[in-house]
Image (cartoon, rainbow, N blue to C red; front, top):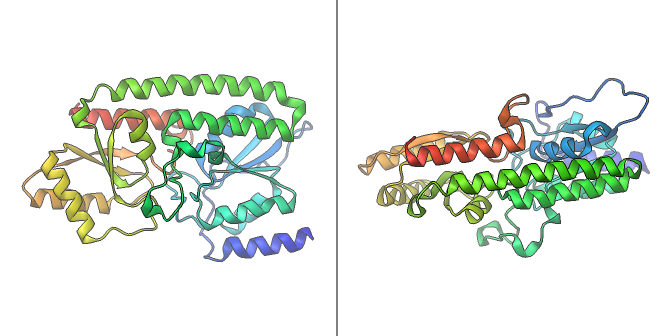
Amino acid sequence: MRNFIYWSLTALLLMGGISACSGGSDSKAAAQSGDSLLNVVTTTGMIADIAKNVGGEHVQVTSLMGPGVDPHLYKASAGDVNRLFEADIIFYNGLHLEASMGKVLERFNESGATTVAVAEAIDPEKLQAPPEFEGFYDPHVWFNVAFWMDAATAVETALIEIDPDHADDYTANAQAYLAELAELDTYVSEQAARVPDDQRVLITAHDAFNYFGKAYGFEVRGLQGISTASEAGTADVQDLARFIAERRIPAIFVESSVPPRTVEAVQAAVRAQGFNVRIGGELFSDAMGSPGTDEGTYNGMVRHNIDTIVGALLGE
């Protein structure tokens, strides 16, 4: 039965084509210590950050999607399928972030692995469901730090359920991590408050920052829709350029997981209307930075983003 499920789900995961390589930031250890570690696999780096902080010394965490990887367009590799089937527990975002891959992950429970969609722990009444996203919720919940605290609690609960012997450690680790996130939430709010209300306009490549905007008081515009699978046309570029020129927006931003050409096209279109808007820097949206850097952690990524946004809008 397990072999049947393996091959069925492998076919589904690879149906759209096999990626050249896995984006995982942590390779599976060749050998484990006598005290067996929980084998945790996550889709995104942001979720891996939660799992590492909450799981601590009791987990081995592999993230399938590394720096610069767009989860909306991600295709599983053959190696990813094996990692998923070897996992004791799989954490993914849900809310259609991983597109069709998310539907397949739900079925991994049939293979004996536990799967948890961390974003679906958030109260649905707090989520945004833009009409252009065809009935789905906006999945970019990690940009509201308070929402990401709910995701961290979901990871804690799942780890305790699968490994109750280390429940006290998971609880202590989660409390420490939640305290760190509460401090981060305060920092983002304080930084955002430095920008006058009428200047808090954030323009990026796609609509990844709507939760950020609502939580911290920014008007948010993206050239593409919530999913980067949608394409921006000439009319979209011209409409956004007109908005920027009329509002005299000083800076727009590229994203690490989206090619910069679309934002550069907007910049050129604004210039053609007689106004110069600069590219204020690169933001991390659907993926974190490289392992070993500040931006390679959730806390560091969020701090980088708010510092970059505020600095560019204030001309610092």
